[in-house]
Length: 66
Image 1: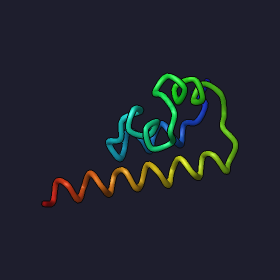
Image 2: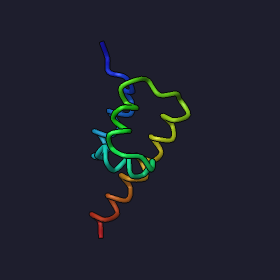
Image 3: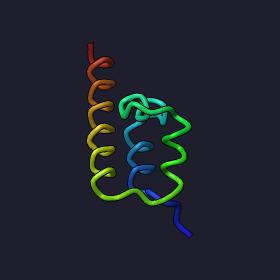
């Protein structure tokens, strides 16, 4: 059985974004984010999370480039 929110989990791993970083960006605790990921999240929320993951990854990349 596949884990819920596989797209979010895969993107976090691929982009090197930690759960706490996404949680901070969403304005929730890391524990809340982990609980949300236990069950499938609606498409709008997933899209928002994917956008935030991308933004975090770009910021991290910019820091490394400077």
